[in-house]
Image (cartoon, rainbow, N blue to C red):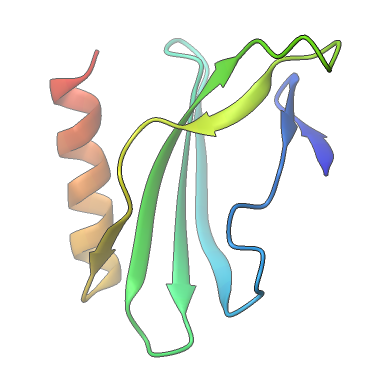
Amino acid sequence: MEEKYEGIWLNIEEDNSSRVVHESYRKKLDRLEVIYQRADGCYLAYSFRKQRDPQWRLPVWCPENEKAILPTFESAREYLSSYAASNT
């Protein structure tokens, strides 16, 4: 757990079978976009929003989309762009 962009970041890929290969914070939208690369070479694309949790003083970054497994890094970036465009 760590503070990231004024929110609490909990690593959602807890089994350490994947690594972060891209992270982008959209300040105007207060949205965090993260792409993980899995051990099998596929990519996971997540969009996060802050949510209040009574347990913590800071909000917690929570995924707002379902798990999306994509074959290439570029397809993961396109997915996040499309997701952001349809959810703003």
